[in-house]
Length: 439
Ligand code: GDP
Ligand code: IMO
Ligand code: MG
Image (cartoon, rainbow, N blue to C red):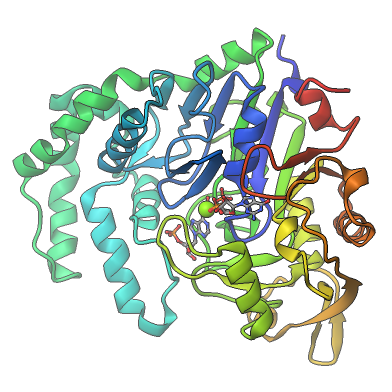
C-alpha cells in the first residue's frame, strides 16, 4: 500500500532560485528517491557541504547520497549532451551516478531547440523573455506539437535516426525559411548524439513503475520542483515564465503517478525576493537595498551567471503560491542575509489606480502598475548563521518568521541560515521533523 506520508513535493514559491537545491539535499539524507518532474537544464540547484559546492542542472539534488535513487521524470526536457557533461563532472569529483534513472518518456532538447530559443529572444528584442537560452520553450513546444524525440529513442540508434529523419525536414525548413539558419545534416546529427545515446541508454527505464514500487514498499520519495510558482506556464507572470507546470500538482503527471501519491507540499521561499530575466516584479528595489541583498546573498544566476533582480519579501506572492500549490509547509531560506538591516519590509498588498489589491492580480498589465504596500519590521544585528534552533534566533527574526507564516497562511517547517547543510533549522514536532527522524 502506498503511504502518502512517505512522499513530499518541494517547489519554488517565488521566481526560482529560492534555495530548493539546498533544502532538497538536506531532506534527501532521509529519502530513498529524489525525482525531478518538470523543467530541464534551465534549473540551477546549488548544494553546499563543507568546502564542496555542486551546481546541478538536470540531476536531482539527492545525487550526493549514494543510497538514494535519482530520477528524471517524464515531465522533464533533457539535453543529452549537457546531461552527459553533468554526469562526467560529478563522476570526476567521486560522486557515483549509478543510481540515476531517466524516464523513457522524457523529451529531448536538441541542438535546434537552442537555436530557436536564442533566435526567438533576439527577434523579440526589447520584449524578450530573458530565457536561459537552453532551448526549454522550443523543446516543450515540439512535445506539444508531437514532433519531439524522447529518451526512449536513445536506446536504439536506428530508432533515434528514424525518428530524427521524420522530423528533421520540417525543422530544417523552419530553420532556413523563418530563422535564416543553415539546417542540420541527419547523419552528422546522429553522430553528434551517438555517444550520449550510448552513455544514457542503460539509465532509461519506466520510472513510473519504479516510483510506484518504491512507494508501495514504504520507501520515502521527494519530488524536486525546478523554477518557481511565478514562472509556471499557467499561473506565472505570463509571458515572462518558463514552459512547464512548476506547481506541486505537476509532480503526479510529470512522474507518472496519480494525484493521491502525496499529501505534502513544501514551498521554498527566500526571506526576500529575487528574479532573473524580464517581467513584472512589484517589490523590486533597484536602489541601495536591492544592491545590498544582491551582495549579501550572492544573487547571481547559477545557470547563466546573470545578476538577479532583488527586492523585499512579498506576502501577496506567498499567499498566491500557497493557494496554487496547496502548500502544507514552508521552508524559509537565506534568513541570514537579512542580518544587520535596521528595518525589513514585507509587501502585504499592492496599490494600483487608487485601489488596494490583496490578491495576486489576474492581469499582468495591472501587475506591472502595482506598487507594494509595505509593513515595516525591526531588523536584528546578530549573525544568525550558526544558530541551530528557533528558540536561539533573535526576537526580531522570530517575529519576522511568524509574520511570514501568518501572511502566507502556511506553517514554517524549515529555516535556512546559510548555504551549508549544517545551517538548517527544523521546527520541532513538524512534519519535516518526522521526515528527518525526529519527533
Ligand atoms: P535553487 O535554484 O532554488 O536551488 O537555488 P539556487 O541554488 O539557484 O540559488 C540559491 C543560492 O543561495 C545558492 O547559491 C545557495 O548555495 C544559496 N543558499 C541557499 N540557502 C541559503 C541560505 O540560507 N543562506 C545563504 N546565505 N545562502 C543560501
Ligand atoms: P531554478 O530551478 C530562476 C527563468 C528565466 C526566464 C524564464 C524563462 O534554478 O530555480 P527558460 O529558459 O526556462 O525558457 O526561461 O524563466 N528561469 C529561471 N529563473 N531559476 C530557474 O530555475 C529558472 N529557470 C528558468 O530566467 O526568466
Ligand atoms: Mg537556481
